[in-house]
Length: 236
Image (cartoon, rainbow, N blue to C red; front, side, top):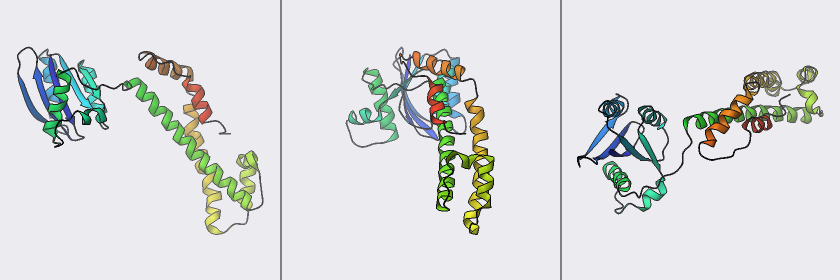
């Protein structure tokens, strides 16, 4: 078993490693852009070496996590705040951080945290994408309602019908405000066109994926599809 402490950065990683069977240890800096890091780990796989990698929870490491999962290597993600408290010296360098992670793993003192799996993350991205589209749609609807009320009309949902849109465009408005009445309905229609395929996708399939991804961690989540319908309600 090779244990590797990784101080991860977007463009490179500093590693400190220890091989349990031979006692071999060392340090190395691996670049990401030229494929040096990927080649290093794939070479370990070809040599049949079991690997355990530890790094702090950080952003921009999805590709690295996918690579380790593909190679069948064990990955430990650590709590940055807890790791910071276990640093003996306050001096912080990439080499010392990698050495600290390696030491914590060897001492079985590594503060591991749970992170969602790839399937779970993919579903979360879908959720946030749909949620942001709904937010954009709501802001535009509110602007159009405010514009109509400022002109003495309160059409509520009627405003978003073909008849309401025609009445809105007939209002006598200054040039700048008139642009809103011409552009916003088109933008809203585009947003609805973008949201609808997501709403009408196989929600049962999405629910099953969501529940399956969480069940592996012992979670009991609510139905994802019903929550997304709540976010996107009022599109009509």
